[in-house]
Length: 137
Image 1 (tube, one colour):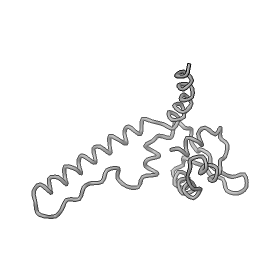
Image 2 (cartoon, rainbow, N blue to C red):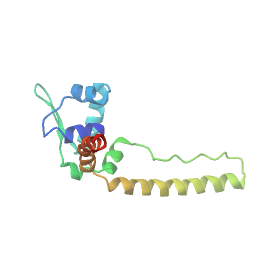
Image 3 (tube, one colour):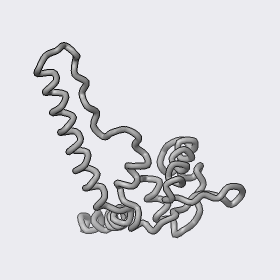
């Protein structure tokens, strides 16, 4: 999301993976791996070679946190706790109860993420310096 926020604020300019890595404090290889996944999901466009780089492929309001989560998270949000196969009735009840609660929590979490777009994050980022100025005044 950090990378997408930077791309969304770059006025459609191409940014290299090296520059993005520097800005987010990580390695360019990490940025390239994420960019590849985001590109497959049609959220980012990349251009190779001199003058190349990355830019958003969609308007920021079309990219939700749920979209990004789906691309960058390969596992279920909440892991079911494996029950010991001891033949205990409580073990079986616990496993199925936690599985149901985990599934419901993940559905609710993803629904919340669907309501927040990259544009919302950009708007908040723009407002932060103004809020700091108001506190000083």
